[in-house]
Image 1 (cartoon, helix red, strand yellow):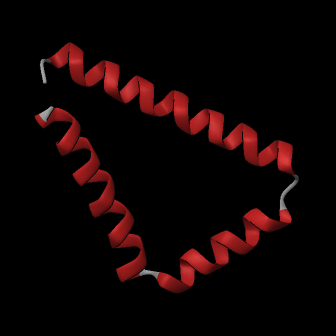
Image 2 (cartoon, rainbow, N blue to C red):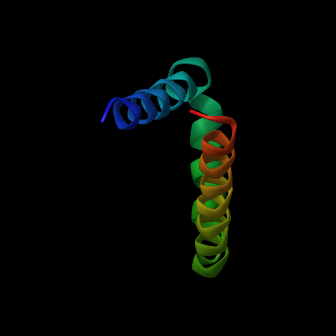
Length: 64
């Protein structure tokens, strides 16, 4: 359970950093996403999921 709380906390920290340090960059990124076709956005989402799974796998391999 503590590992889950750690993961959620880290995600919240990184998300908050984007909003706090670069809000205009975030707005430009969202505009670029709106301009992209839905299929491309889905592919990016799938790639991010795969990358996250790889990171989790590596974390467990080194002994979290």
